[in-house]
Image (cartoon, rainbow, N blue to C red; front, top):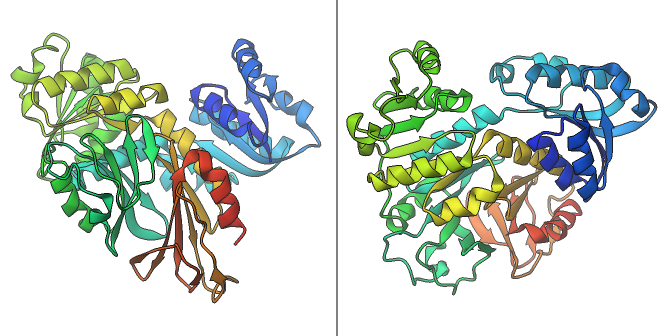
Length: 442
């Protein structure tokens, strides 16, 4: 495909690096030096210019592009660039990154002919909200076509270490991956679980939740008291979303007094806002942060999030969450027993890659820090696949499942497909091309 990326910041850079391996990529940015560095390591075309200036696109006139992606830090620039792209060049599909969640509820994107919009701040906050329903979980992923979820949990302070993976398989739950010592693997039924393994379960959420309580006995069984560090845009969005339900005590800690005033005005009395300018090291005791069930560090610097999470662990906080803004810190967070939650920029990158890799009937998702991929295909009414006998995609590196009427069937033998069936393929990401070709060729 021919793809244009407007903005060469962290998200644009990640997208360009990934997409250029399979597609023809053109990237636009004001900063010539950033583009020069990028072009030295990635095979793509660069254009130096303002994405809000129609003249920037002159060299692209009379060319057809499959996708236009706007991912600068400015909502206004992204919106305006899609308008210009629609007027000046031929772009069949437009994808935009927006920070303001207001646009998710409005019809502005639709009126501008934007096909897909990602809202990384809101989506990051929602991902953390799901952890409250699954206290032992490290991460919870949802899917468009089913209520079944992908839930990861650490083997911690548990007696299940040494038991075979097959002991945790049923018609409503299965293990679709293990992250162990920086590597991802699809376990056989005989594979033994190890202490500190990160287990990826797929299936009925309530069934998985009951197992999680036995696999990780270190985490709290419920989360009522939450402390959030930093009242920046992300911390504020998380506090707003988590405070919607009564019965929770939420504290938002911030050094900047102006930010504290703004947060207190926005959140009213739903959240206790604490100015930590003079009491940072004593705050765990003085403000009873040590009694929290969960601490969430939402700074833009991963190092600061890691340090704050480690300090919370030292004070005995059972669940610590660090926003992961730089993928290089993902493994370190796991090794330190910190839940690594995708930051807005990382979230935007994965959301856009997944949208590009998905279609109206097939969904692509990534997990395990991008080391694993899942493809989902639904058999819709009037599909040509109804009644067709399909042979499975076999291999030790890929786990194929067929979900029929809520029951999980190992897709190891041919199936006559029925309306409503769901095909799931779980694999290490290095095998995703093979799986993608198979599921799209059905």
